[in-house]
Image (cartoon, rainbow, N blue to C red; front, side, top):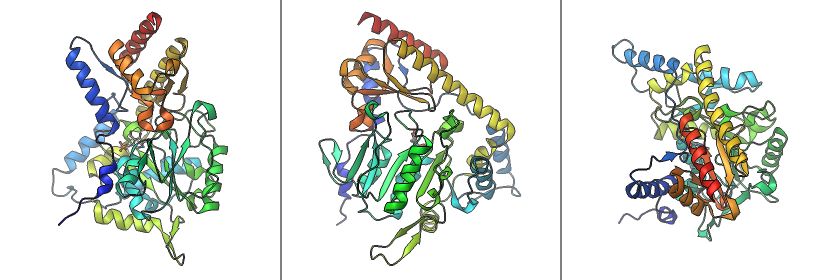
Length: 412
Ligand code: PLP
């Protein structure tokens, strides 16, 4: 008799965005005359840039002849992309990464969700709270998160990030085996200054902790002193795995490509304490067993963003979204909202007025003005009393949403 993995039964029925979609659909059915504006799910709206399109066309044409056709590629990525990543994303920041430390993937969700397979199921974990839900849910699936008690998982160390601590998580006063950090942060849109990140690397080295550092939004950083990579901090090669994504950097949410960096110095110990094992090697072994590589076409598309014209074109789109963020930040602040993030990230984290719960404010805003946000509590207990807005919309939609909210607030 096959038994089910009962850890899956501990998960809530739906992923957060499926819950939101259900509520939005119910609203649309009962209010067919309203044009709903979604500033909720973090999907991009602007098309791929011309350099990427051209590279994809060329790659498709290569597939059309026997001489240039590509079948299975290397599981961990083509050298042309791994080398371009090292040369463009790390070398200019003085960070030394070897191409064999870069694992090309089909986006950061897969690897942030799967990475836990190469460490023991009973390691303790820590997460900044609120967080991108994949980190916790993937740990629930293997039993590492424990059981849910009053909205919190019993084996998870929650590190609250709220207005009260200026969204800077406090370093735990005890050992935690694995810590997830995401900067610039989804959902709060806040960043971690270099001095703070140094404390985390120090903590990890002192406690033999692995930091899973999600840098999916690093392309949105504008302030010069904010680190783009944890490897800008001395010692991080010994304690951190870093995740990157082309989804928000270059509009690849539908193309699918990203990469993970696992330095060769990073090791974890066996239970009996007698051996340290290279995680780069384990991940390579894992990927070559369970993953057959990202498509050649997607990897050629990704490589095109590192050409001079590609760089210029993706920068223009990022600037477009950041102008949305600025516009919304100003409008909401003028209306009297307390607004965080949006300076070095495409997300705005907004305190709900009068301490209204996140879901209640989500519903009020949807029914009053047809604007969809994401309830902060969906990202963790410390998200209660906040909502998240994304800057990935069309400019006109952002403007229209702000004007609808302004009118609504004026009437309140
Ligand atoms: N990490 C964070 C923090 C995200 O917000 C997202 C997507 O929204 C991802 C990873 C996943 O990105 P990808 O599209 O590369 O799978």
